[in-house]
Length: 397
Ligand SMILES: Nc1nc2c(c(=O)[nH]1)N[C@H]1C(S)=C(S)[C@@H](COP(=O)(O)O)O[C@H]1N2
Ligand SMILES: [Mo]
Image (cartoon, rainbow, N blue to C red; front, side):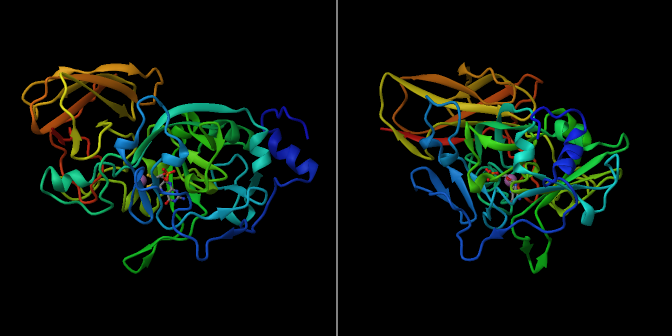
């Protein structure tokens, strides 16, 4: 097979060579029996273990490293990490939105090798769970929300490697009337409260697909770890983590709006003062974290150098202000590493002559679109998008 595939020749080339591209119905080989929910090691000094989820500890984040190693990145699984064989894995693509519409049982099929023949794109971005910071609805605002009690460690900064979804759709043939794409994972079906909701799946607009969506096979120069979506996951940069479906098994491309419980029941604002028809969540808000443990003890010196990071799903971070007196006075932190449009910004602040005892540190970022962090985040039932300035306790001794 040739390595330079012209527009829409992927399908024809695959068919001509008798390779994997064509109609298939058989699912790829999978195994999960008896496996733990997360396969990578979770050393307690790096992670808080929530069972199917694991949170990165901010005190373990090295200020000298801009990117988050896969070994240290948070994991959020609805069920368990599946073990998938890359050689038999296939991505199935079907739906009314293809220029030659296809039923699910007659889906196009792309192998890993097919994807690797396409142009490679690398993109550095923050990667974050919608519920990052959720525990602060309870501890800071007195209104507990349901879901994993993350502090601020359900986030990382990574360089994805993959192919632009736009390239793939261009070759497969996208109808001008296509509006919606539903990505579905190959992990086990998700049941909760006695209801089986089926495969983890979520639709997104064709506009995002053509803008910057990736089918990613790599992170920070390595193949994806099983826990992070091996062999291939969808990445929707800047959007809520749930949009980046791991262990991608299928894409349905449609001329009508697709829905799933992951954009109608979950991952939209419900409860509080939100209207009943609030839209599905998309772009992540602005957040900030100190590279410190919760309640960390700090040895008193004349000058204590503190570091942290801020990020936004919409744009680069423009400025970061910090308070070391619980919000009475604010001063600018000094950004020292950023320059990646959708990635986080590292900053430092020299705390001069801190008083002994318990203190509250606060950091508030503003992004290039002018979005900033409020002091209070309006409540929602599932504790999404806690973007208020977090009151971080430390003790100076
Ligand atoms: N197939 C599948 N994709 C998924 C999930 C999942 O459980 N199954 N979890 C989602 C959620 S809620 C988040 S925050 C991110 C987490 O990605 P990570 O575990 O690689 O950090 O994956 C998303 N994609
Ligand atoms: Mo998430």
